[in-house]
Length: 254
Image (tube, rainbow, N blue to C red; front, side, top):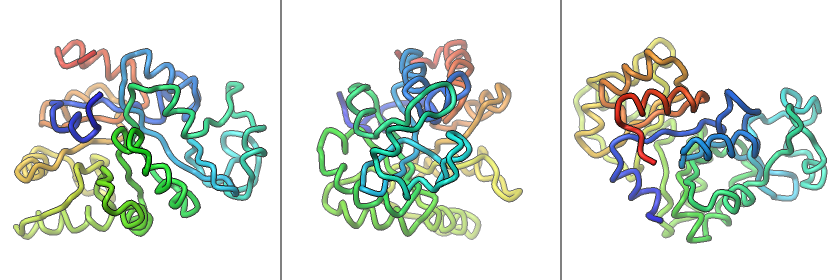
C-alpha cells in the first residue's frame, strides 16, 4: 500500500467519504464507515475528539447532546463512559485506533477538533503505518501547528490551516507567490460570500503543486461543475451519488 502522499500525487481525482457514508448511516460510526468502504471509498474523512483520559474517538461535536442526548462535553467523559454511550441508529462511538485496524487498506483524513486530542494524536502519528495513511487538518491553525510541531521530523502529511488559507488567497489577490509544505487545500466552495474554488483559483493552486479538495458537496450539478473546472477531489456525505457520477464519467477507480 502506497503512502497517502503518493496516493494524492498519483491520483487525478480523489473521492472522500465525509464522516463515512453519512447520508445512509449515522455519521462517524462503524456503520457509516463500512458502507463507504463497501462502496469502494478508500479515503475516510473523520473528526477527532479525545476522552478525558486521552483516548481518541471519531466524533465531530464538542458536546454529546446532538447525537447521544447526553448534555456533557465530550472531553469531560472518560473512555469507559464514552464506550457506554449509544448514538442514533444503535451505534457506539468508534475509537480511532479501531478504525485503522478495521480498514487496513483505507486512508484517513483527520480533523482535530479539540486541544485535548492534540498530544494523543501526535503520539499516534509516531506509528509509521498510521502516519503513512493519514492526512491531518484542523479549523484551528494553532492546533494544527502544535500537531506539526509535536510530530516534527516525522513528515506528517497535512492540509493548509486557516491562517495559511488566508495567506494563500491574499497572495493570489495581489499576485504574490505562495510556498507551503502542505500537500493540499481542503476548502468550501464559498465562504462568507467569497468564491474560494473556481477555475482561476484551481489553476493557480495547480501551478505550484497544491491539490484542491472541496467539501462538503452533495448536489449532483455542483459535483459535475467542480469536476469540470478541475478540482482534485470532493468530500461528500452522499457516497452513492458521488460514485455514480464518477462511474458515469469513467473516473471511478476500484
